[in-house]
Image (cartoon, rainbow, N blue to C red; front, side, top):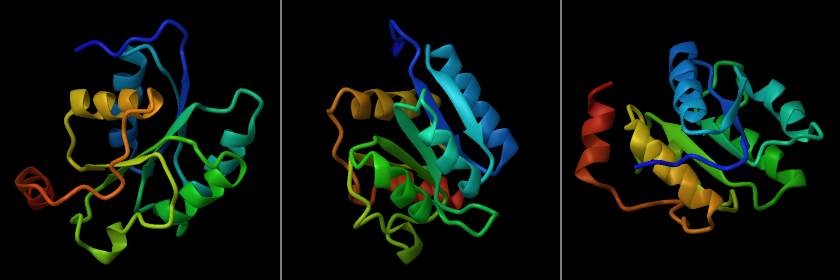
Length: 149
């Protein structure tokens, strides 16, 4: 499945695990996006306010700098309430730490480890206005993905 774009859209990646961020960058660049990586939440918000602001964001819920992903998303959406966000997390979808209510939308949750094609599909759906899955039902694959960590 191809998710290539005619114009490169910037996508902000807020991920503190360098290897995961590099995988996301490579996947996004290979699909025609222009990835912009921020290794922590505090640096992410200024990146999003730049005049060439990203069209979407990919945000990990647990970040090492103490600013969790939910707070990052809220801050990103202060200036752009409808900014599409793919949330990546190793938290079980039923865990309190994984609760995405109150963050606005469009938002899609993706469990770690994730499939790169699924990642690109969710992002394309968000950008095309087709995704509204802030809190999907628990699936066996979500449980298996978290257990694999």
